[in-house]
Length: 153
Image (cartoon, rainbow, N blue to C red; front, side, top):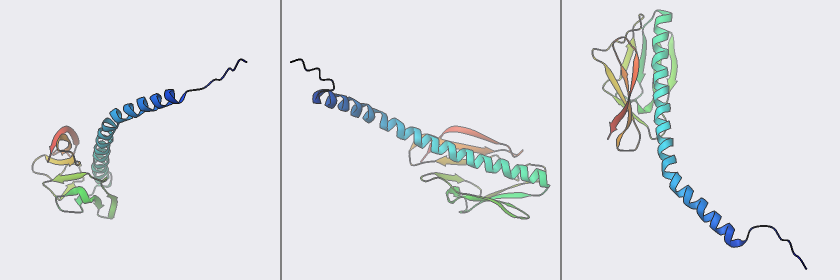
């Protein structure tokens, strides 16, 4: 009698599952770091977009537009873009993201310049300690740029 049985043995299946488990254990910490980095980048992009929106609104409507924090110099509670006609946009922050700055609000003039006396920095961090943060810098002209590798407390 010739039995032609095809399939996997129990030992082959267990070994395969063990190898897959080891690979997942190695990849999981890297995946967490990637997710945290993407969360910070997303928060930076949201904030940068709101600053660009406020500046553009000030220029196109020829009015002063203010971005103000919902929590003083702690921007972690979100912020709002306010024009003379009322609130134009309300934004919130992602979970576990802390944003701090020395100012509680920033106003763009009708010509697009920011009402600051020195370049202003917004530090965006998460729950990691070390050079993992991002800094959003606003200069006199009202433009915004990014600095990566900010030290988080």
